[in-house]
Image 1 (cartoon, one colour):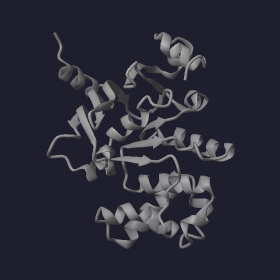
Image 2 (tube, one colour; image 1 turned 90 degrees about the horizontal axis):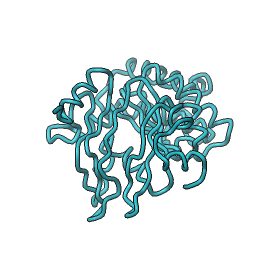
Image 3 (tube, one colour; image 1 turned 180 degrees about the vertical axis):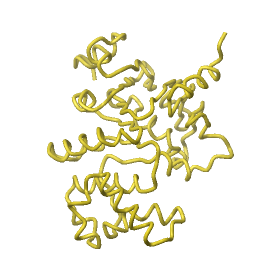
Image 4 (cartoon, helix red, strand yellow; image 1 turned 135 degrees about the vertical axis):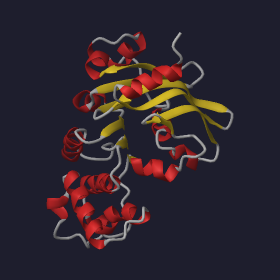
Length: 269
């Protein structure tokens, strides 16, 4: 009989960048999510969908140890990143967050210039050469489809940018440290339709180089941008569980679970 660890080794070898094994999170004594087993393919967009209270953001924050910052949170199980458990004692969470970047629901630029927002992570990670910083700031802003809009005002305060520009600036800030995975928690929730479309177009371009995992309540958005979709729902005790995972086409046109079908058809949630 094949063990789960052997299965995970196989998954890693065939191109999964992140694998979770019986991943659970408790806040205090109560489970928020339990026994999540999922494999995230490289260079793809995976959407996490489900009703409120299903643990989507909790799950996402496990993938780069952001839940470490919550005192009452206790993580059980494993998260393998390139075959290594990120919760092993010898793993530096700051290094993990550089390799697995995160963009939050609301744009959160620092009260600094546009340039210094993007350079911030580089400086924190010990990059001191001015030319190198300038090169990587320009590259990150270009990747985030923002360079042409801000190249003549890099010294201006980031708060002068529109909401959509601020969110792309936050994406550039995450990209500047050259991560492998980009986590996005409702990145377009506070944006207008035009800015949302820009973010979605950007995600599709970025997956050529990065693996993207996005939490969204917008099922149309998941259908538009995601290659794979995971459906999470709370059980009768309010604990978030993974109901189904597959290609986005399968989830939306031929789901295996009745719960998934009811959710994507708008009957629950």
